[in-house]
Length: 94
Image 1 (cartoon, rainbow, N blue to C red):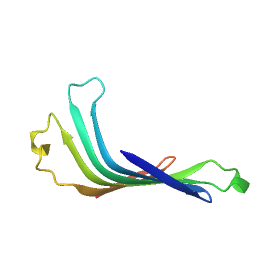
Image 2: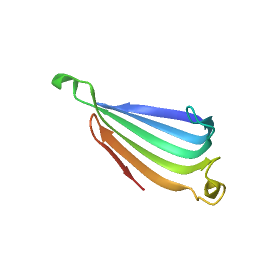
Image 3: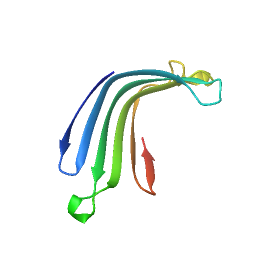
Image 4: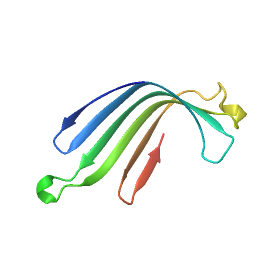
């Protein structure tokens, strides 16, 4: 995996390329394989207004395969998924 990013006023932008991660879900026998690319934006309140975390957004373009879901093995095409959220709010769209 390759990572790079940059800062703008009140935000951090992170690009993750060539993601190829394998792992096991906690307390389960299921393994997952995540591949693709992602961009993450972290937004912060202006320091003059007290600073702190404001919200985030994630664009993920890739695939997720599961050892327990046979249909995921090679038949799920990569797709773009968007996650956004703040302290009490989380949204998912594909």
